[in-house]
Image 1 (cartoon, rainbow, N blue to C red):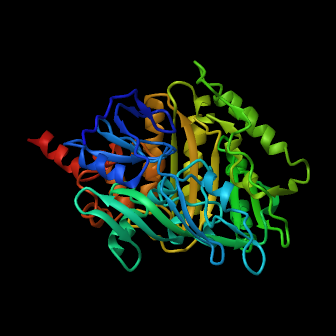
Image 2 (image 1 turned 30 degrees about the vertical axis):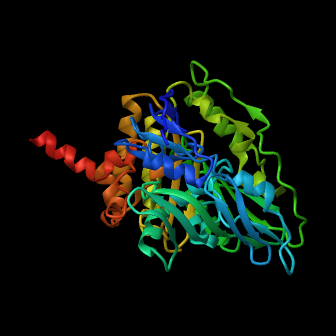
Image 3 (image 1 turned 90 degrees about the vertical axis):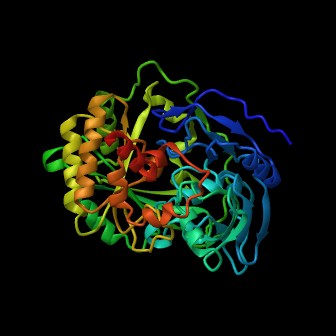
Length: 461
């Protein structure tokens, strides 16, 4: 069989600040994926789902991207035990439309145990990035609920992996950024919940001490997350709105909405409307939204609480043609309060605020993957429009603060992390590198992996 890989236009990551030209392949069956891998020649390879990684971990400049959306079959669902077997190109939206909400024996319904802030990610992508959600303290990360997976390697062919079979490779693949081979299938255990309605309580807090006080008071609530005003300074530093949610006992299962968002941003505006003045107005409006009481109680369908941005297709284009960078870190509990304060002080002083500033705590569940991002502590995620050297300088300062505190940066959100920062945050990286597929690569891995050492030696020579 002769397979031709046509060159296409640049692929962009979700942050739109990183792009690269690739050759593409679109297999619609696992055998076709194996044929593509065999016909790659000397090109490096990377699997590609929906491209929701913000930085460059989903890009493979000059190499081959294997699009997985054609591998999207739901293969089996055990409604008695809540065990799902599907191809890796299935999206979480596909699963929400088919199995989430189905009745579970003994009452309640089946639900995804963990979900990130969008349902438009593939099953393979959720595993490769070991995504976490607003319920990490109760359910851990996505990889904890993966029972097994089928992996296509360039050097070993098809492999079935799980905790007891190819266990080290299984742990490397969870959170392994697609570098251990092409994930073809996965088996996932769902969670039984009372229904898909949530009681949601929004509470205003005046400073970081108030945030941590609400974290302690909300230990019994499965879902917790906070918006923080990253422009506030002085006594208001760290103010924000804390949201917590729990399932309504006996609440009915609500059907999932159509996968299509209600609004759309079809084109990037020539100048981003997201700037320090609109941000200041937005933050002031959001802060006052809860009224004098500073508290609001709502009943929401599960998906509306978890996926607020999914209502706007292409919201990432609002940052303009240059795109944006997301900076997400996690710092351990001992250093978290002081570190988050330093981060917010640095951001406020720079004047480069973030529209999406999310603050939450992660639980003590052991990370299942060698490169899993979640660890116990506090995580802060922020979006910064690309403004050249000023943005780069700010992100470098934030990196230093995080690393000094013993924290780490999130590879799935990053497009500029240094090799030193990566290795400091992920001490298992050498164990992982020994398990990476020799044919698989990405812009991220070229920047932080063993190839970074070779470039340093070449420059020195």
